[in-house]
Length: 229
Image (cartoon, rainbow, N blue to C red; front, side, top):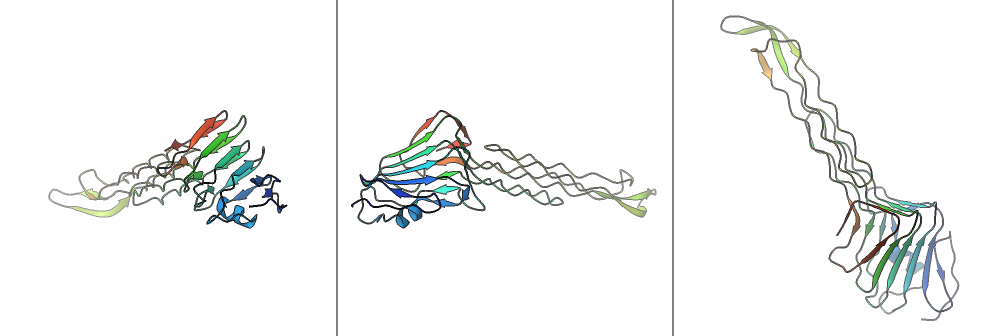
């Protein structure tokens, strides 16, 4: 492949020595390296061109419902280097609604690796590679009971308690908190008609770097929050 010029939205350039350089200089989301390299003239079916992605200081690559950054499947002979002085951040998992004790959702991955070949991720000083935190667990079911206890039966008004509060979502790289159990109302202790429910578990955090069985060297001089593997 011969080099040629390319520069749009601060995302990509082709250097004279035929290296594909993708410079991310403004905030973006759901970034696909293969898509951006292809727009710069790269052909994954035939090229062995090295690719370098630079996330500039102060820039955040975020996500909504998918990976903040994914490699796509490049040519296995193309080396890929990702340099991070800004941030690549996964999305926060959804917190479950209260009342049924449902679990929170899993947080999103920051960097999702899909390609073979020489692979290096450099988290430089001031850089962040952070998975999304898990969503909080939903609160448990409210209890209920009647307010008047007779010798052999219960009667009267049914008093309902409150559903439990949902747990807090986790921060970067952290699981969400468990939701609180429901509570009983003012009914008699021996006249319970509906037991309280336990709160749901918090969702797990995503991966800072999900390698998918690929060989990826991670050099960290900044912050990596979340699992790598």
